[in-house]
Image (cartoon, rainbow, N blue to C red; front, side, top):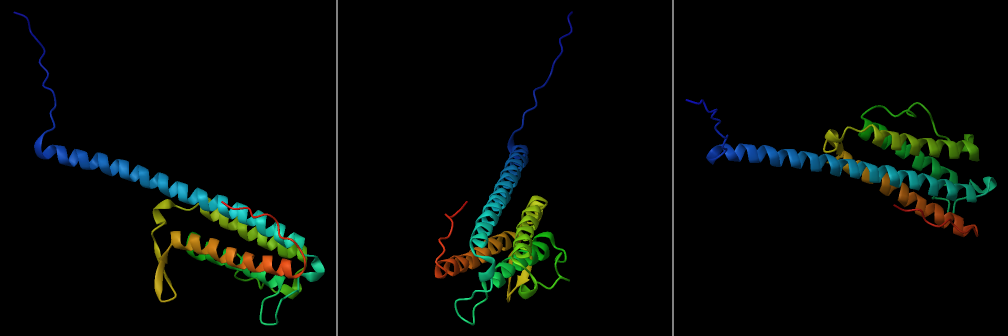
Length: 190
């Protein structure tokens, strides 16, 4: 008499199928979410890198003797606009993206005490800091909310705010160039 090995195939049926299907769907969903978060962060990294190059090109077109230029007395000067952009990038990146104190919190960015080269270095450093903040950001924290002007915003919204704020002031700097008869550089976008 021969002995036959008998294996019983594992059958997943009925109620057991739903939990396995749910686990598979959750696994795919988490993978897709992780990929989406990675794409989001990479796009912000690229945009900030391009924004830095564009802003520095704008700033270098303005003669050092015209860095104090302002179109009307109530506006910030060209130099103050640049420092405002850099200070804001440091603040938003540190406080809301890294969740730590600003590396420039103790430093007063007084436009009158800085020359053109130190302003350019400050702005470049701010963009570099923001890019590094994105590179080390834990994607699991992207939905974390922070109080903001009577409401709340998450880290994705703060990444957008960093982009929008600097673009707003860059637009003003382009007008400053035009008012001084200087053609702005061709836009570097996404």
